[in-house]
Image 1 (cartoon, rainbow, N blue to C red):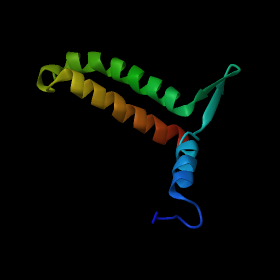
Image 2 (image 1 turned 90 degrees about the vertical axis):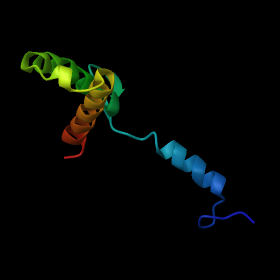
Image 3 (image 1 turned 90 degrees about the horizontal axis):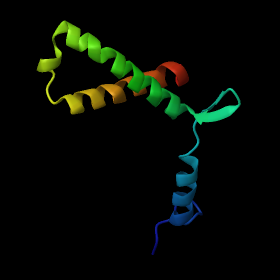
Length: 89
C-alpha cells in the first residue's frame, strides 16, 4: 500500500514540488530576464575577488588555511548575504 498525501499519489506530489522549486524572483536587466540567484552569485564572486587583495595586504592570507576552500566558502557566504539583502528584506 502506497502512502498518500491527502488525496494525491506521492508521484504527483513529488512532480509538483519539483516544478514549484524552480520558482524564484526574475530580474529584468535591459530587456533580458535573469534569475535573481544568478545576480546574487555574480555579486558574491565579485566581492570575493575584491576582498582577496585586502587579505593579502593585511597579511592574513597565509593563515587562512586551504585557500580554494576558504575563497569558495567566502563566495557562497557573500552570495547568500546578497540574496538576503536584496530579496528577503
